[in-house]
Image (tube, one colour):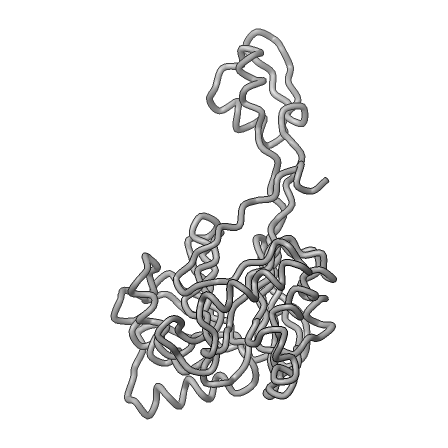
Length: 314
């Protein structure tokens, strides 16, 4: 599982940063990619990576401001020309279906794959299977804006193959049966219980990706005990009044949310074009005074999210 930041700017693109889009790469987990927001130029950013548009099967839109949706019709159109024939589900606030369908209709675009739309207004679970659950809740912005909490199911414990080798247990199908916690009788008459050779379950990962918002209680709720919190930091702490006026957060407010939520890591994004990278590094230092494990994201930066180890949970 990796996060790939395709655009870390806000409002308008700049020479340093494109507008909002983040990919959650689940290639090892389910051979797919989930996209969060799709600002103008997102598909150009994708061309600079190894990401394949045909792998994108879910797109989550936080809110309807242009810097988060203007790239969506173009990406959907191009996906069909790049080998994408599998269905796509677009999750977003009320209006996203009409926006996409109107854009495709009046541009004469005909897709060779089906699109399903899931529009939400109230908080709750919008997707769930045996592997992942995605919950949405409302934030506070000029337009209705939302955040997403992605929870992975727990992983089964690993088989202690080294111990089996020490006991001279021959590898092969017997290992699979022990992995399934079955009781196995060996050719030499020994009886082994798989429960004795499989470690404890490993907690699934939690990722929280928030849309544009003022500091809000639902941000903390969505980010509770998350492994990674992706939070906007449109303005620096010295411009808190401006952030409030435009319904955004400062980098230090994002750090406060991460601290209050007991998050493991904070990734800041959605920066005003007024800030150069050296400015953001200074803001990163300020945020780290509140929440030490804070990082300013750059366009095309990728962050791995490993499965938590047992010692990390203690």
